[in-house]
Amino acid sequence: MNIVIMGCGRVGSTLATRLATEGHHVAIIDTDPYSFRRLGSEFNGERFVGSGYDDHVLVAAGIKEADAFMALTQGDNRNLLAAQIAKHTFGVPTAVARVYDPFRGELFAHLGLRTFSPTNIGAEMAYDALTREQ
Amino acid sequence: MYIVVVGAGTVGYALALELQAMADHEVVLVERDRARAAELREELGEMVVHGDGTEVVFLDSVGTRRADVFIAVTGDDGTNLVSCQVAKHWFKAGRTIARVNNPHNEALFRTLGIDSTVSATGAIMAQIEVSLPEHTVVPLMRLKESGMEIADLHVIAGSAAEGRAVRSLDLPPDTVISLVITDGVPRIPTGETVLAAGDEVIAVISQSSEAALRKLMSGPEQEA
Image (cartoon, rainbow over all chains, first blue to last red; front, top):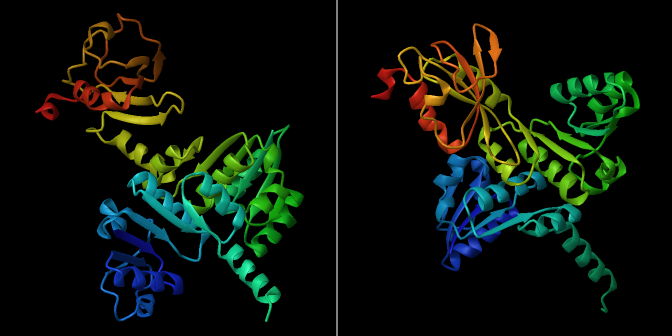
């Protein structure tokens, strides 16, 4: 698969490295070139410096041929804008956005994006850690 | 009407002041920056509320559900888009209006159902185009329901349109000439109205007819 990832933080870099080692063609975008240090040495994909909702950057990163776009920055709204550009402007079949606010995540899932909320996932895991049998 | 304005920057602040001065409107101005919100609250009073205008729980607390008009005018397109989408789809707010900072996003905002978009860059570009002789057809606004455009046309000396009656113009389909302005005097044209060089014409056109109209209104040197 051709996958474009926006945001090379801990989650973005870990996912990019994993997908690249699984044999996918991965392009990762971040506004800060220093963030690419997080990519594992086995990462053989492409790196692009710029904004993930700038048309020029997206096209350079191969958005037109992408099978999936993943928006993984810290900003919910940035992620939702970029994922919708990928889906509606460039017709990327699968657009995933990380959305901390669970309500917003739920709403945009209804509007055709794939969303996940680290807030819900984190709360669930914290609850499990507290209540599980030793 | 109940109006929610998200973003108390220069645009939002001026807008809220204008709206507040009009009778019969209840206005809430939402600002995410705590210090800016506190400062404006001193000046404008309780209409200013500190909070994140894209957050569902917060928007619920300011009564977005009963908003007749919901306006997002921050300097960030992501915020403006998401804010209006939450208002529209979660709370079923009446009419949503978004400021578009990057003109490339305007089409996307419309595709995603934002009722109106306002782009300063787009507006300034239209002004520049009006003053360029080679820009004879300037789209002024798009009608949401039909997708038709209202355009400003200029009749150039030596063009195919000059000296012709409206009836005999080879207008593209879906084009209606609504107003002809000669020396600052507007007239509603009939089929017999003859267009002269320098006339300004307001027309309803379809996007696909723009090129044909440009050809009709341009001087001969531009037809080649």
